Length: 313
Image 1: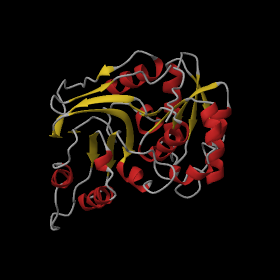
Image 2: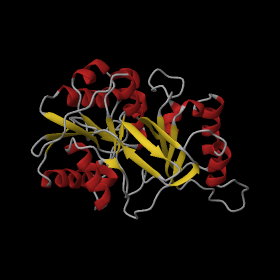
Image 3: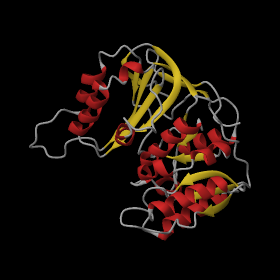
């Protein structure tokens, strides 16, 4: 796979905003996000269909794909940030003009449902994309200072980030020990696993996989991990990083359940690869931006992750 890095973002550049999945219900949310970006010195262009809705989707598939294509076609737009995740981006995978994206590489940002687009773009074009803050809930509210600083440094500088530091200055915890290196892929676990068996998921061989999720009960996480286990996907990896799993517990105290930790331990303790957890990424306010496609080093014995190259040029 030939990796393509987008150009770094400069003050005064145009940032395009699109909603490939779901949309925000309150226009004030989008207005606050636009105001935040403009105060930082960027110009903003909204997708022409960014205010549309079609049930739980931000417009029809055709409207959402039109906005995606228009932003990549527009020579003035230097970065594309998703308004939110939700559901619906997955429906666009077989409708995307990947040649257009490959010929017009740009910074593309989002997480959660946006995982589907990011993995497809990486697989089909080699474009480095960013699992990072979106308009909602991040830029439309008071954004966490760590999240903010890390994100803008990532997309505006060609300097190598190196070893990641976290606000608590603690090392990451591990399930297994050892070191690993490889190109980082992954994202939201439910979305990523739904792509298995399609033509839009990058190969896992010798990769570093990072996963996170929200609102999935332990038995559902169990089901997903078992699917990946029997497909022998974990064996292909050079390392595994577990992000934050939010609200992933049984809410009914009368039901028998395993804890999320017990599920993870059961599937991962005997793997012969380094495995870290408590990595600050996912549906949380204080998060690391992940540039999918770059090479990272991880050390589960000492508890750190290192970005060994820049994500932009």
